[in-house]
Length: 437
Ligand code: UGA
Image (cartoon, rainbow, N blue to C red; front, side):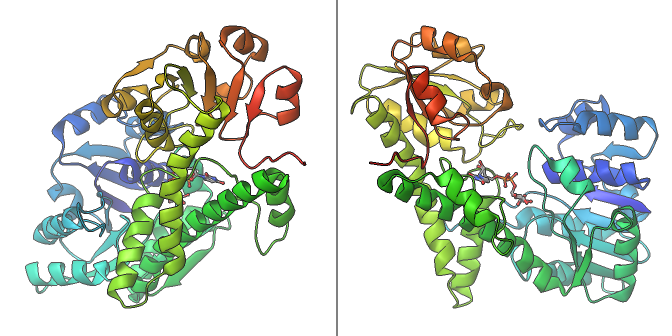
């Protein structure tokens, strides 16, 4: 199959490289000439484990190419994927679809023969209809189908999520488009991944409902964590105790500083807006978004309490800045709210992150960035673990204790055990690990 991928950002690049790895011939397109030139040199603009090797291999074997102009790629394509950004629109929280519609207009101008146009970008319900209208209006006689094929890739695990998905959702009523999509994903369903064919609008709703449900699960366990702290229970054990019930499931029950990233905050907001416009507000999701926002600030209060009620004039060492490990992505990262709130009340902040410091420097003022975890904790009045990078899971704790001015550790990801830490002489605070009175 010949595939054109419009947009070589996170989703486009991962999907394009994986499709090429299946044996399809893929052209990844992006308007940014600097990005395309870098990709052609084998430089990957994002940090994603395994991606640069996968891109290099498929370029070498001639199945993956890059270009700024979509004409040639779209003309020869069996399927054209739209994988451009859909950021939150300033002011109203709706998804900004201008890049999607612009891509649709450009595809329409050059498509040739029967073409399956697939929206992979996360788009509100009804966007597929609008893309179809644009294509029809621009090219009244053209032969095409518009399909919704949402992605479920987690940053940091995107390649394995793509190659070993729980399911593939394909929204279209067009039998010929189904055949093309089934052929494109054939290597996966041979591996037992269920191919779920639905209507187009249904597929669009599945994407938002899935992310909103996961965000709800996290927010639920975060509130249970707060309760556990007050009543002397352990949220980790509660999560295990409820997660073993298959109806609930064990995943996405890790209490922490609140969800961040480029998807959950934006997608919950977009779903809230869509539902309000439809006259059927999703009140649970509205509450989830509000509770999560408050939580990030509440984490700074937790640090202040652990430091004896004030951080004025004190130095706080922050380990982990990205919204989660194995990414350099700082979007909506809890560290941003926590650090700003600590600085606002007079703390000096030192920080270290294995991949996130370049982005962090553009977002946070007045932070001292360190070269490693130990340089970060040296001389600090407290250590706060905000992101659970593997590198922080096995710190030399005796060294950490010697380097800290006062041995206070606030572990917002519960990567250490309270009893171990207390035994070593730390004042240790986790999330949702209350002590029985
Ligand atoms: C999320 C979804 O997991 C993907 O399925 C989806 O495709 C993607 O959004 C998207 O819409 O593109 P991602 O944002 O990369 O992926 O990251 P997650 O691993 O889902 O984590 C999101 C946030 O939730 C992080 O801040 C993480 O720390 C937090 N989280 C996650 C928790 O606090 N507890 C958990 O148990 C799980």
